[in-house]
Image (cartoon, rainbow, N blue to C red; front, side, top):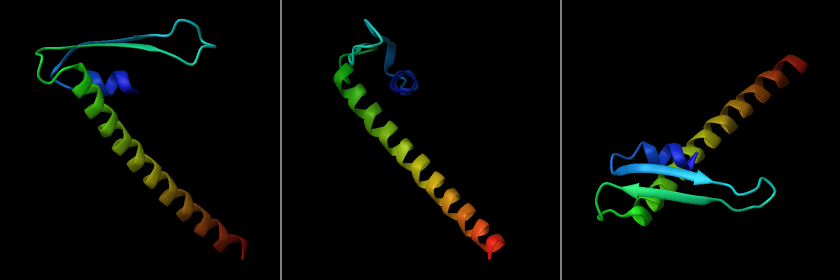
Length: 78
C-alpha cells in the first residue's frame, strides 16, 4: 500500500521494497526522488500521512455501512 501511495507522488522517480524472508517482520524500502527537495524521507512521511487519512476514511465508511446494515437487520427481526 505504501509503495502505491508513493508512486502516486509526482516527485517520486522510483519506489520498491524487499522482504528478505516472509517470517521476518522487516522490509527494506528504497525511494528515489526527482530532486533533493523534497527528499525521500519527506515523501515517505507525506505518503504515510495521506495513507493514514485514506484508511481512516475507509474505516469510517465501513463502520457507517455496518451500523446501517445492523439497523436494517434489527427491523426485520422485530
